[in-house]
Amino acid sequence: TTVMKTGVSGSMNAVETKDFPIYTELTTDCSVIIDDKDEEQTIKEFLVKNFKKLRRVFRYYAVGRHESTADATMSEDEFWRLISDAKVLDKSFTRNDLRRIFDASNTQS
Image 1: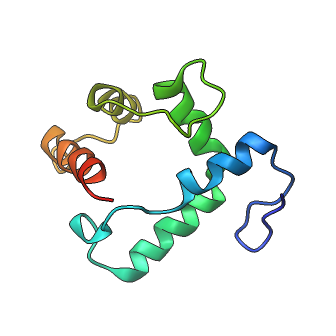
Image 2: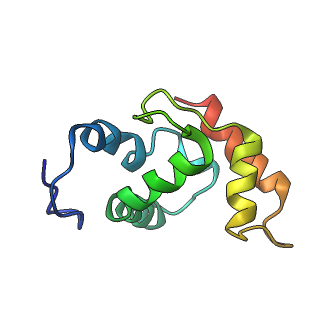
């Protein structure tokens, strides 16, 4: 499978093809954390463009030895470790903000 329109070019193997929608589609109501449709579109484009990198990071923090991320989950502690390692948290973005995002992503379909 080749995805040219989105900025991801090149062949994807069967597992990457299966995982692609998991990493590139926003499945929750983004209005919980994003109130600007242009910003939401920018995030979607970022997810598509950086699919392989994001998949690799997720696998490092949550998946372990699983071949596919289709059935994998990330606990709040694993998410915390990812965000902490990325140095995202500061006085303006706290653990409570992180928990709100984590909860929103796990309670909406």
